[in-house]
Image (cartoon, rainbow, N blue to C red):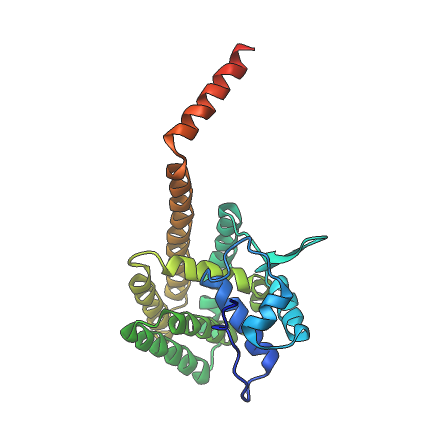
Length: 249
């Protein structure tokens, strides 16, 4: 029986946006795991919407890098590997540090208020143990940071990476201790910009991304270790015997 737990409710929010967000969340929380095929008929049943809406959502997620579409196979959840993740963090580190510095120089009072409100929402989510809400708050924090920086090129460069950034954010936040540490780092960013200290804002943003990168990349290393441990001694022995027989030929 097909699960309908992703069923989309109809309200004033554009339905296409809701379908896209529901699928994005399912991918980022691994309910739709990496490499999983995305069969339109099944997604229509799960979401309770038309095939047209599902296709539009899949196209949007493909543009974000969360979905791949292979000829003769159809769409599937993209597989994010360690080297790609490392490259994304390198780009983020430079651009977000720049955004922090520009925010100090250009932000208006309403941008500072948005930044404070986003961090407050994250704090409330932490108190309630609502990680999904906290992740949304993180996105709102960065939206405010980029808006206050007044440089559309920064947001434009990062926009195609937004889906994979969200996925990596969820991955790093799942690591023990990361959520609390992230809140402290974002508090440091807020304090730096409110103090009108451009250099401190640059450094705080840079430290935040570098710390997130360390946690996320560590999670990839742990995955590799789990896979290595899952190979049984019998299979290892067979592989070694096979290698030895090849060496004698």
